[in-house]
Length: 481
Ligand code: NAD
Ligand code: ADE
Image 1 (cartoon, rainbow, N blue to C red):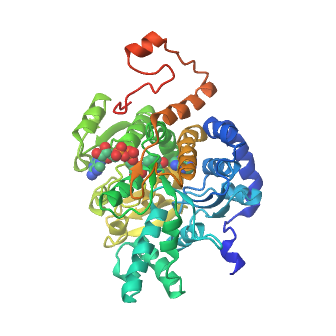
Image 2 (cartoon, rainbow, N blue to C red):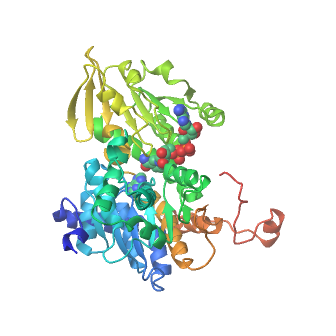
Image 3 (cartoon, rainbow, N blue to C red):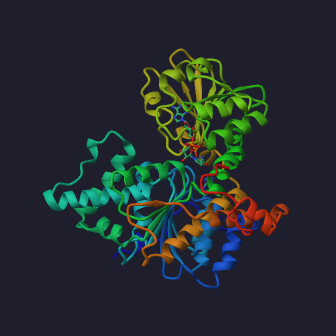
């Protein structure tokens, strides 16, 4: 077995000291993760667990990795986006050997999927025992691998990447094909059989899992971390409220006040984005397909319009729908000169980048890394952030530590639960579960002292009156916050 296959692959190992200084600061801002280290570290609750992670390799993720390591786990990590790695974070983790890391900022698609493959491939072991996934790419690779191996066993046919239009899917098929050609005919089947569970970070990844579960195609047990209240109602809202303006400003330095900004999608992420732009002094317009979210936007004082109504007057466009085909090339052709177009949703299919690249007579100038100006034949241009990939992580450093501490405390609790229940029947393969509300409240509780918050205690009489326990949970399952 060639040793190099299992070593870390990062770009700037010399940046480890900078990474470690930022990780030290992050720990102070991440009371959720530090509380979990304190409570579960001495018991080594993850001892023996091999964890693979596909999640933006940032400083905050470094703190998650080192929490899982402090609980006894062995780790391999890759980023879930080609532009989101902070190279100094990767360097600090590799230097301390708390995880193997396969990630750098500015990967090609081919490199990205090679890194994902290496993160999932454990030396002399079938694969990860548990997986942290963000967006579902690692879960997808395993499931497509299993399908292709079954097909190969039956027919002897290899997958043909060229049959697929989607460039990412071509890479998925390439990886699987290369494995089969190299004689690994059971790699993904054995990996899926060994996998005790997946905890999924984001809305789009959970959507993918639910679809697979409904079709009966999901092979593993999954925990939906996104829908913890202390994740989606904090990271998606307040995280984006912080990191959207950060990304736009670092990329363009444009004055946001006075500008017309269109936020496409007013879910959790869109709510944070619209609030941030309003706070910057922008005139905010929202697009929505859901009448409830549209009405919420109106009640917050935003105009709700169709894209077509504002496409030629607005200055900045941000997609946050988790849907595809939101801003098309013909829309960008109608925009003002130097309109800024970016996406904060998980995948790069919200903005029609392929259509833009293929637009007759279009030319592209790179202003700097992750900022490009596309000029139409009539001479007007649009400024595209992070090539249509999530701009807060491509053009800035994503959400700050405090809010990621909430998200990642839920991740750590999900990983512990999956590992501790690996041999029980608490979770069933093929199903997607949420963490109990007690844990959600615990995560929130861990963050209150840092903000000097004083929690009111219920008397027994009050608790009985509203039908809850004195120690919580304080809301019924259907409560929407
Ligand atoms: P959500 O479901 O709460 O919100 C999406 C909204 O978009 C919904 O209200 C939906 O009605 C609306 N929508 C769908 N199609 C539309 C269309 N064609 N036009 C207008 N509106 C449309 O999801 P969310 O939690 O807000 O997440 C949105 C995306 O952001 C997902 O891809 C998620 O994975 C991602 N995300 C990114 C970050 C980040 O840091 N960049 C953080 C969290 C989530
Ligand atoms: N998602 C959004 N911001 C992030 C960050 N800073 N680290 C990891 N994942 C993120």
